[in-house]
Image (cartoon, rainbow over all chains, first blue to last red):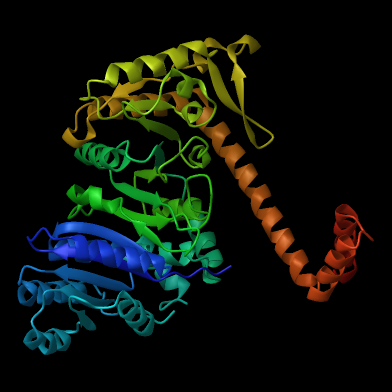
Length: 132
Length: 340
């Protein structure tokens, strides 16, 4: 019997140590019936893309609070492209200034979720962009 | 649903494409219809990898031990596939798979492939499809496959059906000598590891485990009509068939004791090969797998042949005490016989 689950990688690239947001998201996605691969703090773009490939995830969720999102995101997307992961969606959360959001989206980020986002909105977004 | 044909996926996997390997695992894990064909094509390519099972209570350090052991095996030039199983929520069907978080030191190495699996409702410490995923990794050519189970309580012993060498990880402070003589997880160990051996309590744990081993008759596991049974040395089997379970002390996070663990695995591997026990075990496993799959298929075929109202009617008759459960079974069996 077919048994399909949405798989999401939750990672924290860069050097800040604030992983509470990432854990809250991991837990909410779990409660929404998804399988969450939690890779935790201080991940390099290389580590994130390698894990996404091996785990065959539908979505990569990155939590960035260090301000390095404009450097880390393009590198992740470039590596995803090199590894043929173009069909994997990328969502970003954390402290992202509004003026950076259009640039991130034009790089291929599917959505940016700032502080105070209702976790149900994230679940809804993932269910919309991932075709099950 | 597959984006590439099963044939392309399999040929890419056999050529060493890691993306194809990951996708094949997903297909098998999700039990999509094409997975039957995929597993059939891969089967002749399996049977080469040596499998190591790692089990133990949550927090004993299984993931750290897997990492340290893998680093050691990589220095010996062996490639390693890792399957790390974590529990699925019985309420929502979701899971947080966190073993990979502790395996970060293995990233960037093309000789290692880590896959996290959710147990998806299966009891026993593994997922229903872990055995098939293991075969996919085997066909992909890994020398060693390490399976880390769900954090195990006392009865999560499915791993013995999958692993050549089963390692049970204990940590100081978790139980006394009475815990150690209970039936269950300690019985399945080919090797016992006491991790976190830098704790001052370590000698208590080692002593309790040693006492547990000394209390038992020496025994071995033999295959008998598809069941794994234990035989004690009073049956007069040759002396060399019996081995003592080694207790290895490790501090996985610093790699301490890991070379000794790797030696113990090698020794167990040679023992299985020389005594012929590995072959016996594999034969027994295949027999029980065949019977399990047969049972599942027969049931599925039968239920699909019986119309819903027939089934409901029988339940109704059981409710009103007009028929008993076993007679209802026979009615259903007759129904299928007439259909086929």
